[in-house]
Image (cartoon, rainbow, N blue to C red; front, top):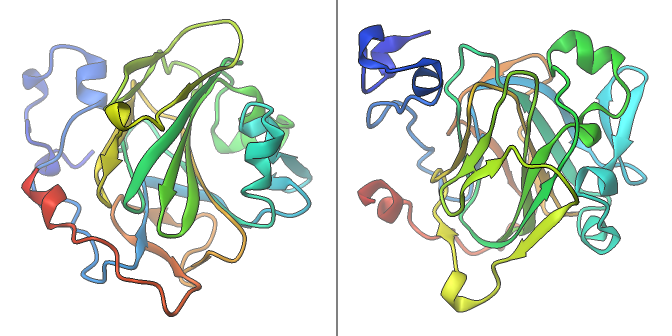
Length: 254
């Protein structure tokens, strides 16, 4: 762990392990690209997989894929918005920075909590447990962006006691049925600038990003197995005439 990046550099500055795992970074530790049209990584970690959503399935590992609709909590109508689109899966190890940020400026449309298992999500389990990410407990955030709908899914795992968001606080653990909250009302509007904090894991797990069909392309330099940091350019729009995104200055000032 590079403690030189943390606002609190000393181990004695943390009251318990989760306080350490959810540590904040110094200002400027994760600079954003100057080009406002570039879409950025939501988290520090390793790219587990990335590519196209084919026939409603997302690639997990050799010999394994899983259902897009199941990942989103079984909502067929919502799943249609991402059919034929793009996905990227980023694994956060225990040593990584554990806050998740928004890849592109957006307005929260909906949050879905999907109860489930808490299997480990390391490489061994990813390669051997079928439908892993569609079986583990997860929190799905749907945003309206200039690239169309975007989903950021925070997947729980073994030892991950909870997931928090900046707008709802503690989301998990809780048990029961799929729970969906609509944020479409103006009084509930949650707007985040590119790179703004979305939530955090109370240890580590996996973040999955989804975009709809014909909206974005992943940058060619990124491949599964490579390490990435939050804020690094990860994708760009397919629309050459797309209006530039709102300035990130407001987020930096905040």
